Length: 361
Image (cartoon, rainbow, N blue to C red; front, side):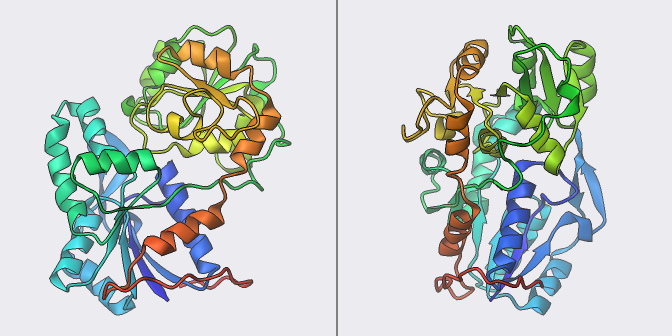
């Protein structure tokens, strides 16, 4: 089987969307799927205004159409609503080629936070983009309900997983944590206004605070909060070591659709604190014992007062957090992805078991 994946978010960007897509591509290859990725790094691009880390591909529908046509995919998935996503959608509509999309980012809330545009105007654009898809993949049932309230009812589940070989409780704590005052609170993610990091940095806390990540608000926050420790972006074992060093992960975002860093932290044994909003509620749950109440003990806390949530979460047992994090397996996520895909003629995609030897496009 051959799949074309079109995404405006790709390496070298560092975020949960890119990690999700890259992992999915790798695991699809292990099931024998040949994946063509069409991404901004293949074109001349411009930095996104106010967010230069994100590159916007400058190309034509003709070139994107030629790339898809020459690959001759059996299925098409459009992961993002950026320039490449719209061009691929246009090709699919013109050729009556069925396609799926996914909803990774609450753009209406992001745009409102950045430039003040009414979110309803952005939702109108998103309804047009996703409305013709055979299915819109979403990470949680709560997100599916939200999209349905905006007229997008044809959703399918596509959850997220965690690499438990990398994110594990016996990871060595990051050296930067040595000598810092306990309890140690951590934030991991893009350093940008929509992540609400200032709520974390300004929250009363008896110990030190670490921030892992890069982004347009980094310089400003470093100047305003000189007592916090900023480590920049970390990857792989270094990122796992940051989770392992912390006593609690603070997740102050009110706009994320899931929050991959939360399950990575849990797999390392680090409890999570957040607001009672989608994302934390879908993972931590209202009472801190998991969204389904099946955790063996407290794995975090949510509260309208982030400081309260952080203090409650820090009392969780690391072993309970590890058990909760290990429930998020990537193989099940790939099963969901394949179940939501459709062939170009609208037929369902057959389920493909993992192969022992990966195949690459």
